[in-house]
Structure formats: structure tokens, C-alpha cells
Image (cartoon, rainbow, N blue to C red):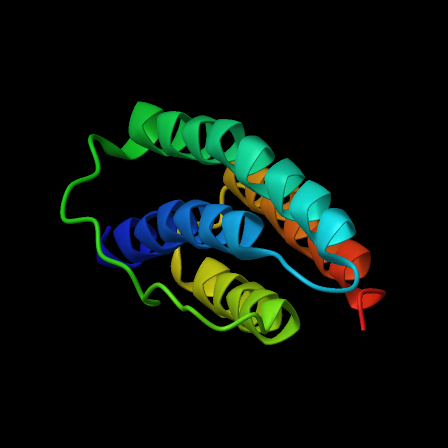
Length: 123
């Protein structure tokens, strides 16, 4: 349960990080970054809710949320989302392997990868 709580806490933190990046976007490509990051922070909440509700239906209420990452002030979106994706891919191996949970994690990874793609062309 601890790994699941850390996964979820980190994903919740990623929503806040994306919103900070969204509000601080500036310079060339900032409008595209603003839009891509807005789509991420809007989309991740429903995906987190669905994952946690499914998990809790089988395994009980999740407590002890923790975050593996802290808020960053830099504008290195690529590095942040790459690290987030690696974290999710590693951590998913340490949570229950029920197919419906893993499918929901797949949707989260898809959103992260889509965001990475949209942000890739800003440089």
C-alpha cells in the first residue's frame, strides 16, 4: 500500500508542478507550453481519481500519501516529465498487478507521453 500511496502522491504533485510550469511559461513556444501543460493538469486529476477509486474498491482506503518529487522552479519541462514517466513505469511494478489497475496506469503514462511530445517542439 505504501508504494501505491507514493505513486498517487507523486501524481498529485505532478498536477501542481504542471500548473506552476503553465503559469510561468514564457519566451518562444510559451503559448504551446501553456496549452500542453494545461491539458496535463486538467487531465491527470480524473485519471488519478479513477485509479484510486478502483484500488480502494479492492484493497481499502489509501492513507499515508507521500511525494517522490518536489516543486521545481526551472523551465526544464522535458527533464521533469521524463523523470515522472520513469518513476511511474518503475513504481507500477511494485503495486498490485490487477489488469484494470495497470490499464489505468497505462492511461496515465499515455497522458505523460503525450505531454512530453507536445513539449518537445518548444526548443
